[in-house]
Image (cartoon, rainbow, N blue to C red; front, top):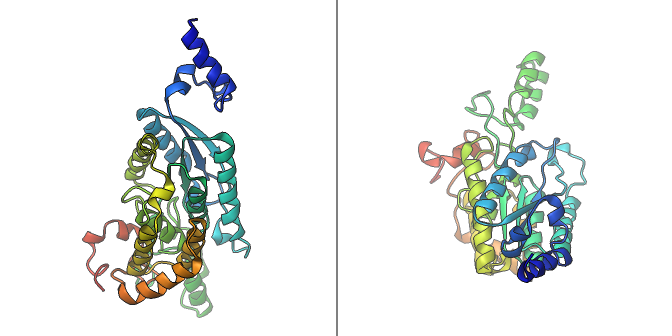
Length: 329
């Protein structure tokens, strides 16, 4: 072995990547290629996260194509449907866990995979803390369920309506059970425009997810193309030294607030953007003042259930031009 290669090898074995050769990476891999952490919230209890193994594989593919080294690790994802009343603290646990992994293992960049209510905000907060190049890739919304009671498409909240119809004698118990088993027909975050899909789209509007990523349905192949492109983009961001804090400026925060108003997003967006602003060093009062100001200037221009209509779910938001009445209320 020549002296140059020996020195490169010792730099790896005694440096921050000393554990990666044990995972199968070569000395050459770790000498010139950026190492990208992938925080994956995949689990088998939350439907919004069931597809994240496949999404993660696509991200890894993109990282490798662009000349990076992908390194995956996991963190938690609590589903709000559980209705435990103790979900919000998970946002800070997710943020803390990603920060610990990034700062302990010194990744050159980070890709964060998540979908649901508290997970995506926690990842945005982690991106603000870690001050390295970062991208968020969401898993995407599920498709809508079958038509019911005048609604062309449904989602899981319609079950509560159906329970009332059973009590009123307008629906049989067998029909209720059939409906409950079909209103969530695929993996993905809930089909309506609740906090999960609001924050996924807000992440795009603030610049931390590639264009279009907030609304691509979980089961569409475009979701995988988007994930691969995100893997390629994070390597580019590392090489250009573009950090998350270079992207999440006050101007981009205003853009996210304007988007929230224009689309009638979840009121939890106020809570999460105020927390994100605090991580970025913006006084939460300033963020709240921006909400107040922009709410008077920006009209709602589209309607996705529950913001104004029962006719449209998230897959309609992905293809708005095909549906009359979704935009320009």
